[in-house]
Image 1 (tube, rainbow, N blue to C red):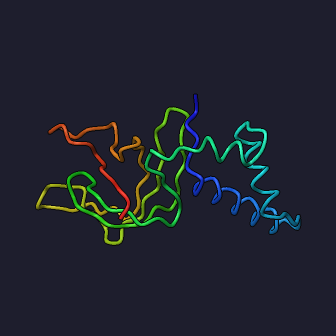
Image 2 (image 1 turned 30 degrees about the vertical axis):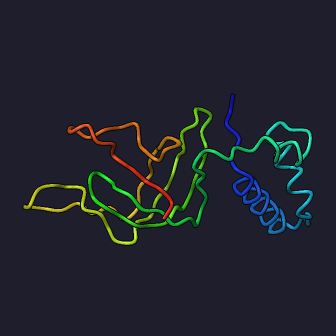
Length: 141
């Protein structure tokens, strides 16, 4: 079964839907956007969806500040995009405040300013480095 995100994430989806529809010339009330999001999640109405919203898992949303470790390097940054996959993993696009050097060599560098990563509900990537550490460990700032 697909994990339903938090009410905040669902409300953000409705807000984006309303804005997108407005840009296309179709006015939509906030209530109508909430009902549409509920239908997209297969629910009868917003109240039913809101009652089933997950309050336990970490929720990610665009604009959220985050910090953690990427390939062993500490970072702070912002979530640019977040999508909850059916498996319960999150697909995130993270923009670092300062580029992260992903190379351990002292002879050259390879800086990353923005990455796409998959993490579980605890904010850890399933991929691990050769020393067994997750590529990414992230949490809300």
